[in-house]
Amino acid sequence: MGCSHDCSSCSEKCSDRKPESLLVEQNHMSNVKNVIAVVSGKGGVGKSLVTSMLAVTMQRKGLTTAILDGDITGPSVPREFGIHEKAKGTEDGLYPTLTKSGIRIMSTNLLLENETDPVIWRGPVIAGMVKQFWSDVVWGEVDYMFVDMPPGTGDVPLTVFQSLPIKGIIVVTSPQELVGMIVEKAVNMANMMNIPVLGIVENMSYFECPDCGKKHSIYGESHIDSIAEKHGIKQVAKLPIKRDIARWCDEGLIELFEGDWLDELSDSIEEAVAE
Image (cartoon, rainbow, N blue to C red; front, side, top):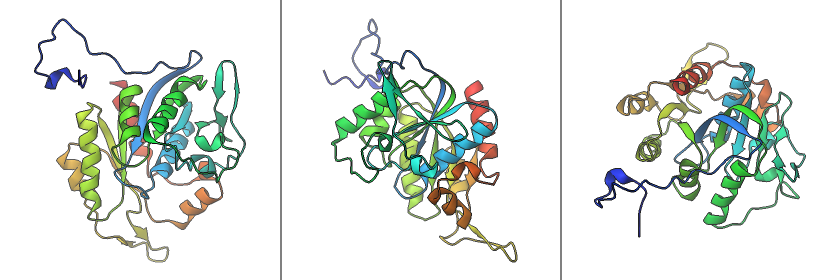
């Protein structure tokens, strides 16, 4: 009774017992090889943007990518790709919607009658939906799946970490001083779940003047490098404040983004999961 399934911290002598796996089986017509969770300690830092850009970056390398939109009550991924049609299903399960470049997406917005309909569910129901997106969706052959997580360290992140075979997480943040503490909460949760942090992305990191090329720290000086060093995280990427990025998202054209900001991070993800 009250077992946390973490034998390393348990005082009971249960050497003859094995902890029960909480992993949920994939749909029988799916073979997702690598699952990467994209997390943030707070909302509004661009987590969905980074998720979409990472999927596009991997897809450009010739890898088959997918996005599981785990932000059930605040889904924004379909709009970034200009997707408005609904997901379809058969007796085998639901089928993800394909973007123009072939990225596979499943989101609650692809199931609602109207995109603006609110999802007013309690935590356990939301967590259950995320598990169904894994078990009931016919993903097919996928090299990399990126899971866009809701902010914080509550029900859904815990469900994803326990139910899906996460190979690593990417933490998304912004430069504000307060965010440093919130980033550490997300990193510490990953450490408690024994999931490696593969990198940190600082969004809205700087503004580069189009006339002189000088970089300005609009939201204050960044502390992300020192936070990464403190936790032994080797890969840090920084996204600028750039009008084109907002336009690509608003117009559903994120697949057309131009910039190498996430190239090194995507390379390090491939290296990490290959080890």
